[in-house]
Image (cartoon, helix red, strand yellow):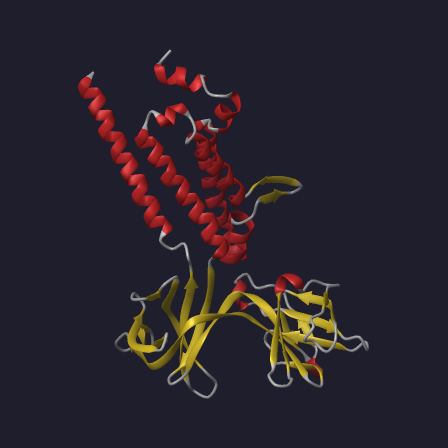
Length: 351
C-alpha cells in the first residue's frame, strides 16, 4: 500500500465519500452529456430555452424521472472540489491544492456570475442619448402615477405577474388582479390581445397580461402595444425590464460599410460620446471593439431602420461583476499545475 493510499484511508469516512475523485469524473461526463443534448435541442427550442432547461436548471425531466441539471451538477462538482481541499492528500501536494482551489473559483464564478449577470440592449438614432439597458428576455409591468409634486413610477417584475396574483402598492390608486398571462401575444381588435405560440427565439416573444380592476373592468396589455389607463391619474405598460446604467451614451454617428456591389454589410460601427461622472469622452464602438466601463460592456451588435427611414444602432449591453473571475481562476490553475509539475520532477530527480 502506498503512502498516498494510507493518508487517504486515514480520512473520516464522510470526507472520503464527498472527496472521491470518481464523483468529479462522473460529474464532468454528465456535463458533457448535457452540453451535447442542450446544443442538439437548441435548434428546436432556441438558445434561451435550452439554457434555462438544461444548464441553469437544478433538475431536468425525462418523462416523470428527474435527472440532475447543470446547476445541480456544478454544485456537486464544487462540493467535491471543496472537500478535496481538506484532505491530507491535498495538503501534501500544494500544487494540486492550488489547482483545485482555482477550479473551485472558476465554478463559483460561473454559478454566481451567471445568476447576477444582466444582458440587454440599447438602441439609438444619431443625436439620441440613452442611459437605460432594456433586457432581451425579461419584462416588467410599469405603472406611472401622476401626482404632486412629482410623478411616481411603480414597477412589478414578471415573477409576480402570475394568474391570480394581486398587485398593490401605497402609490397605486387601485389594487390590480392578474387574470391571465401569455408568453407571446399580439394586439387584436378593440384593444384586445390574442395569444400566440411561443417563439423559439425568446427575445422575439411579446408577452401579454390581462389585469382586472376592482370595478370588474379588465385591462389587456401586450409588450407590443402601448400603455393603458387604469385610473384617471395612472397608466400601465408592459415593457422589457429596464436597468439604469451609471453613465449615458450619445450616438454621434453610425457608419456602415457594405461589401462591394452588394447591400450586405461588411462592417459597421458607432461613434459615441460617453457621459460619465461629469465628464465626457468620444469612443468608437465597432464589431470587434467593445466599450468597457467597470462591470459594463457594450458591443456593436446590429442596426435597424425605423418606419420613417431613420437608421438606428443597436448596442448589446452586458453587466457582469464577475467578468474577471475566469481569468483569475485560470491563472491560479496554471500556477498550481506548474508547481505540481516542478515538485513532481524534483521528487523524481531526488529518488
